[in-house]
Image 1: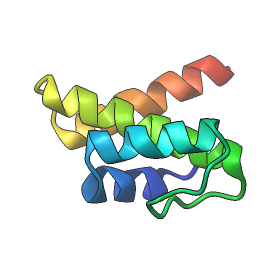
Image 2: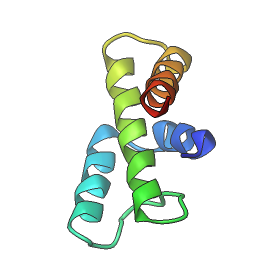
Image 3: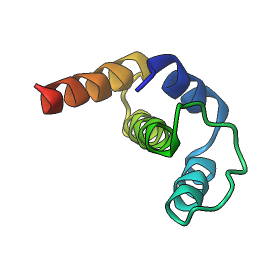
Length: 79
């Protein structure tokens, strides 16, 4: 997981575009957007992270807060 890639997705794409990319990856189709990552698993992680952050922003969180909440959740799940 690369936070700069997730941050770029949040700033560049809409929720709809990211959902379409998520579906494309799951269906093993080519992506219509540029998603950084070493492999499809990492790309999917980046997309899911960006979606979660954008959804939290829609609920009223600031971008930085939403990013910290996501990265904290990921760190806690790994520990």
